[in-house]
Image (cartoon, rainbow, N blue to C red; front, side, top):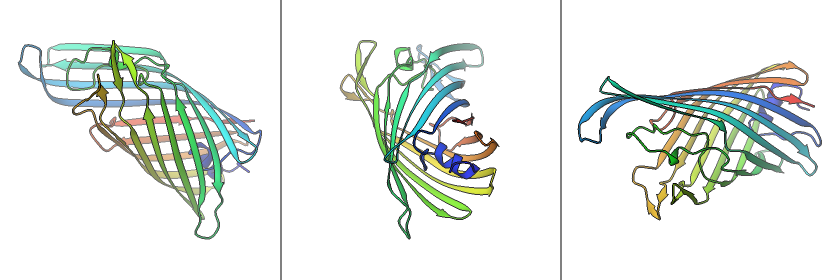
Length: 282
């Protein structure tokens, strides 16, 4: 049963699986904005004020299908437009953009526990992401701000995670942990590796009505330092953290609309990201 907004939201958030041989087509769109105002060192040694911003638009097409033995498989194909601009000293402006295919991903999920008493629903997942997009690491970095743009990370990666869910009608509490390892890649003739990532989230989802759900969450990723040519890259570790506010609504018995706003909480995080997805169930 996934007719209510709450169940649709849980499927979309990875906390519930589709019934066997039920599948969804999931088009989605997101827009992220990141800005920076700081001092920068030019190649001639002078120090100037640098104002930069980056816009990332992404169109995605996903597919997920429920399978027997309480499993589900899904994949997603993104298309990105990444645009960055930087102004130095209020006079010299540089810009760059990349567009095209992003990093394609494949996900397998399985439910291993069902809620009973104090025991929550528990789902495990495996995720593989292929480096099908262009990477910003192949471009020259103009300043300390991440000016270089790209549509992908440049690295194949494999992740594993667990999601726990506890119901307390009309609320559902959801928590998740995910570890992602990226494999080495040769970029511009140099072997590089993206730092391992540790992701966790805590969310509360409210069934406001049969046709509407509301949610709030805290999402954080800790990324370890990258390696370049076998050596750790100083300052490359990141903490990406967001406050998420979302709403889901049943449009028809087979069409669901989900929208969310992510507000950046750390310097490494985009200022805000707006997301919308429209799963179609068959």
